Length: 121
Image (cartoon, rainbow, N blue to C red):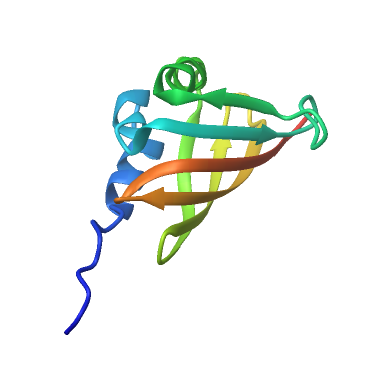
């Protein structure tokens, strides 16, 4: 007797969410109780920025998507209940951001997301 697979993670929805102009599509991929941890030059590993729940994650994503910049999903790997991807972003002045993410899933929704990012200064 086989086991039933849980809902699959929608990588095309991830692409549309990242490359879109609104945070709403991306936010729909997160579970209500998701947690996001961001590590970068300003929020270093011993003191990362942590957002708890979709509302706090929405605030962060709304800020990011309110900026005049492009976002591109470069690579994405799904293995069981884990997703890893690389995202590149660019501002109109040419400044770039590169981000790597590792996510854990439950029932096809993101429950944990760790984002490492660096940008041109």
